[in-house]
Image 1 (cartoon, rainbow, N blue to C red):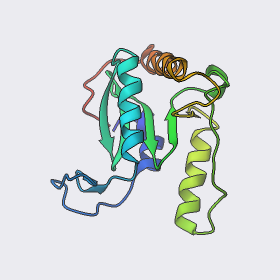
Image 2: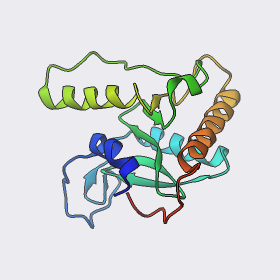
Image 3: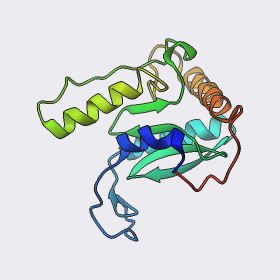
Length: 166
């Protein structure tokens, strides 16, 4: 596993619900698809608009974008969690998102919320997948440019390797 991916993979980690070879509409490699299909499509759309600088994949049933050096630069989950590997001050303020739900009283859910909060206070920023403060086309362009910056940051000075890892 790539050391830069350790914390994000810790957040994304989930239990398998089926054998690893199981892939259906709602199960990916044995993991429950825990991301709304529209959000999965949005991750692909942003990558495409950015010129496909990353590889789309799933980790633990959640969509991720992986730079050519193997570093995860984007992940999504649920219906609106969309994060890019950039500090908040590197992201257009109109794109920055926030947690929409209160902290859960359920111990495991709360722990995942707190893991995500820790990620987005350091190397990651939660962004709005469909920003409402900008016109639709401009929002996609801004997200694509932000993804490109995340890829540049993740690959500068970091030796390339195969994208299958991590």
